[in-house]
Image 1 (cartoon, rainbow, N blue to C red):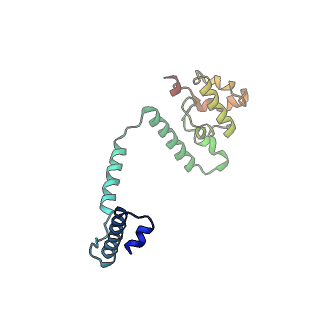
Image 2 (image 1 turned 180 degrees about the horizontal axis):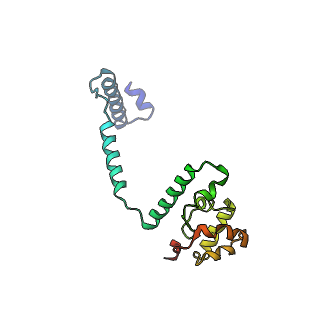
Image 3 (image 1 turned 90 degrees about the vertical axis):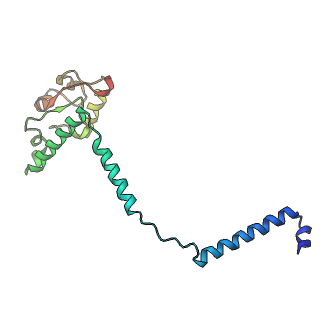
Length: 170
């Protein structure tokens, strides 16, 4: 048999390597199917629970910035007002009629859509204007946004405010 391998061009080192690989393969099969190294399944539930607790505690320690806290309070109060309101047709102004004003320098599009007469496109235009002009300096400046004229401004002026400039200014 050695002569056959030599005729195929194998050296002694090649033959030893093939023999080693075959022997390793055979030992692996014996170990796998004999049950000799049979480990019990590991229970991950304890480590998962520890990870979840450390992750939860890490997030609970994080403090929201004051702007984010204000936005969160505004959105929560709007959502509470909207959920209590039974008249679906007047939901937009009902959430804002509680004396809450939307800061147009901080508002998200969804916040702006709560304003009477402001749809998705107009809310996006307000955000574009805010970014291009580094925020609004007065509530009247919102009339510079395409789609907001004097009539629409008169409808929303009691629901908007300009508390601070956007984060782009810093």
